[in-house]
Image: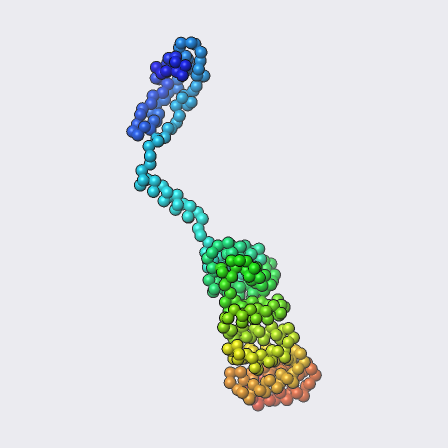
Length: 324
């Protein structure tokens, strides 16, 4: 017998369900049998305060305990939850991300959209990308051949660096080094943006970074491509030492080629003879002689071209198929 809310006595057939109390106040159903034509009726007033309920409504499948969880069990559950969360969302690693992107550039499968998405992630977090990872990626992108995924790598490099320079966190997570500026200047020459290449060199000098031979040669290349050959000659002969560098074979080849393309092969010959007098590592080579000889032929000065050829033979430089 149980007491109803209205005060009447209610009968409960024990055959409908049996329950037992277990430790800690947790109630679980021990056994239950379907009650044939079971009803709960009010006894005194005859008013039915309870409708007809089935077995499942009377007895819930499980009642949980309100006993507090122990400290040890709580720590174990929180630790398990933390481990699951961390394993499902690992932290982003710039070094690994840029290494993967570099391989995709070399495979020709990295699109400009993917490149911008990569820098989106970089600019949203605080960990700077390692210098070698950044420069390796930019160098690979600058020299990547045109593909269906990316048509113009050098232009994309310049666009990315321009974006990094504008962002507040850009130079903090992607700090340019001397190698970075060399890559950017080379991209300017490839993208026919020589004026921007000269601006990058000026920025390099103002940052206080020490200029190296590659940067100096890129400066000469930008000047020559901008048809400022006289300035390139001046830098080569007088000012390159002020940058802490000495001209090498690439320096002289760049200026000699520019002079000959400007139909100034005689001035190129004078520079070549000066190199022969000075000797050293920058003495005239087969490539330098071929450049000037070709310049004379292009200008129609065949006799000078032949004389220079014989001079080359006297210097012990063996001709190749280009000479013939």
